[in-house]
Length: 158
View 1 (cartoon, rainbow, N blue to C red):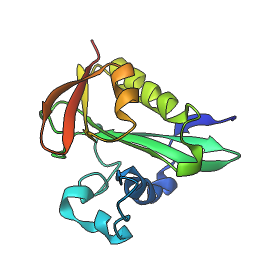
View 2: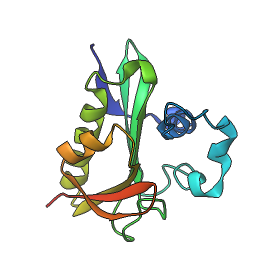
View 3: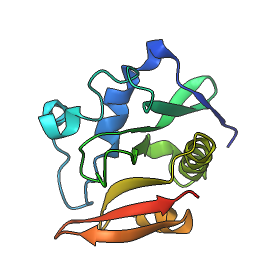
C-alpha cells in the first residue's frame, strides 16, 4: 500500500477528533462506545486547543490523498503522563489501513522528530490487550507502570 507521512495542516486539526475515537481500544466482544465519549474531560486533553503549544506535534498518513491515520503528541496530564517535560502519544488508523506498516511508520516518524527536537523521552498508555503493544515494544517503548487495564510505557530518545 502506498502512503505518505506528512505534517498535519492546521485546517485538518478537526480530524483529530475522529482519530481520537479510533484510538479507543475496544476488545472484539465489547460494543464500541458512543462517539460522544471523546467529550469526556480525560479525553479532551488530547484535543483541546491543539496546535497552541510548541509541544503539540502531529503527523498524518495519507493514502490516495485521504488522511487515514494520525500520530500526535503534547505535554498533557493524560493516561500516559510521566512528567511535565515528556510528550504523551496518541496514535490511530482507520481499521481498513491497519496491519500495513502505516502505524509503525507514523510512530517512527514521531520518535525521530521528538529526538531531533531534543526531547529525552516520550510516553504512552496502552490497554494490556491491545495488539499495538507489540509495535510499541518493538519501537523501544518499555513498561514503567501498570494498572488493572493498561500499561504506562516510555521510550528513551537520547
